[in-house]
Image (cartoon, rainbow, N blue to C red; front, side):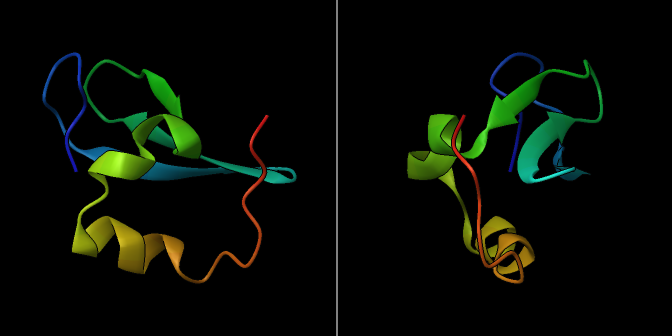
Length: 56
């Protein structure tokens, strides 16, 4: 999955009690619900092990 801002790859960013996606290039963080409609199969598989994702 790519960043909306700079088109670099997004990675999973795990923090205490929350999971976000963060761009490798520009460092922008996305809450999962902000990009849920754009998730590709690879990203969905990476997020699958997280049984709870908090939307804050």
